[in-house]
Length: 163
Image 1 (cartoon, rainbow, N blue to C red):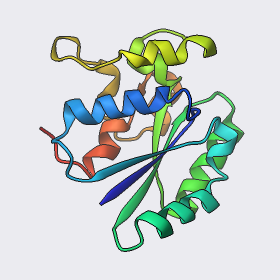
Image 2: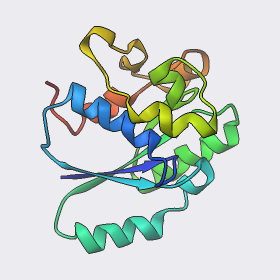
Image 3: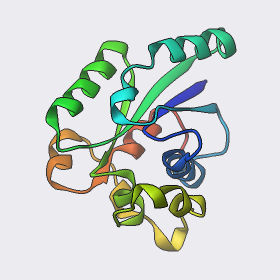
Image 4: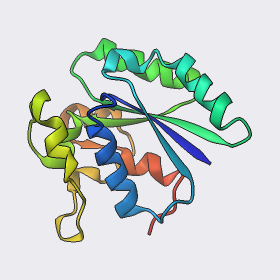
C-alpha cells in the first residue's frame, strides 16, 4: 500500500512532513507500506491537487493500492475548514487535523514562517517526551474547536501497525 500525504508546506521546507514522518517512525512498525509526501504550499492549494495526485498514481502506483491523506491546520476560518472536509469526503480521502497548527501540536509553541524549517529539522519524538496532543480524538471536529491536538493517530491506525 502507498500512503500519499498532502501537506501544507513547501518542497524546500518539508517541515510538516518531518513531524508526520517522526510520528510514523515512533509509533508504527517500520515500512509496511510506502509513504509519498506531496507538498502543496498552503491550505488553499491543498484542495486543488487532483491533477498531481492522478499523475503520481498513474505514473508510480498504477497497480498498487493507495490512500490519500490530507494534513491540515485547523484554522479559525470555518469556510476553509469546511471546503477541506467537503473535498476529502467527495474524494474519499482521509483528513488529519492539527489544532491550531502542526507546530503547536508537536512543539507546544508558535513558530514564525522563517523558523519552521529550522525548528523541524531536528525534531524527533522520544519515549521520555511523549506528546499528549497526539492522543486519539474520536470525534475530531468538536474537540478541536476547544482543545489543542490532532487526530493523526486515529487516521494512521487505519493503515499502519502500531509497535
